Image (cartoon, rainbow, N blue to C red; front, side, top):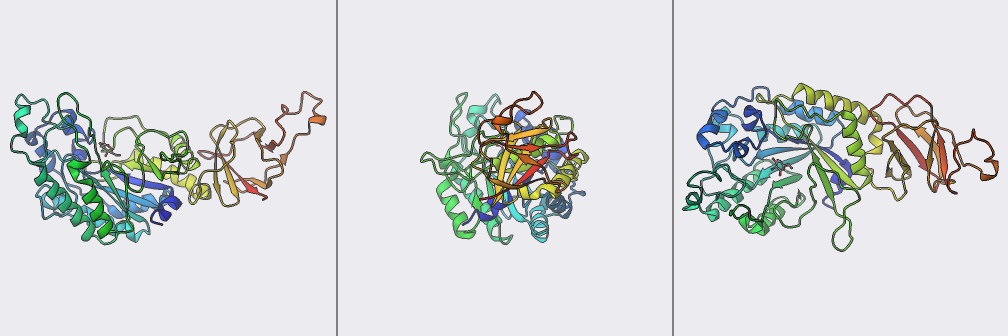
Length: 421
Ligand code: GLC
């Protein structure tokens, strides 16, 4: 099965890097600020990724416990991080470096799976028609701008570049296309699967890289779906009720590209909770970093990844190779399961006891995962419930785990339960 490694890995790194990293105010800056090609050109001219170190990025990902890394090969602004024969608007032209090549080699060398992101939107290409996302949408002569633009020619370019990426960099494990928006707005048409000739594009992916996973953002179903900047609340299923492979992509501060003045940084604790939450619903989490204008991992991001890495070092078994468990968790957290191990990820630390519905008689051993220390368990006996000093009477079948008063000093404590049956 194509997605076996993906289900196993559970945790990946997204890397958004481009000339917008020099602008340092969101990867959509050209569209948000309606910048002309001339306005935007300075970021191309002065793009100098002297601190972009693909090996450091790959190492940081592995140390954070991630199994794959996904790099933007081209974002909506059209700037390419690879040596494309089809455009001059690339890192090769402005800095003499094929960053995709460096990335692919480094990620492979680190033993991780190689993922590429490719924008099907392209605000730089002269044939890509203006629509409600395009930086030129509010120009005085906006309507006239589409005269002479020919999406068929753009499609050739798009397919040509995807072909380059899938033939010149060896085995690619994962491709994230971005994105389709068929609805019209403000008098502008959107762009659906026809705009990209999605069927043919996906067909080419299957032909050139048969084992590669492809996401759903060409607007047609493929291998996995991509909730963005929110968490689902249950395992995802299709119309027939069959499970869907899914991956939530998440930012560190709300922006994908480097945004210097944005301080909405998520805490490492929140991020590991989101990771456990995803795995508890059979999903993956793709966590983004936006390297700075010189290509370095921003110190605040490196610190966050280091902390997550310290947690993953001790709690890896509760994430990697784990998935949804068919038990109702207590109110303090979520479960993940790997074989005969059930993991309780505690979002809050209760006083003295945690009560697990329906697990009485089903657990042969309980321990804290961070230090392997045994935890006493008991099944409350209703006949003995005669004093105000015993914990509240629980429903029949409840297993009570006894906890130390001191919460373990980790981002999120995990209790490992070995299932008896
Ligand atoms: C989006 C955004 C984008 C980001 C991406 C990541 O749809 O347009 O900037 O790259 O999703 O999922």
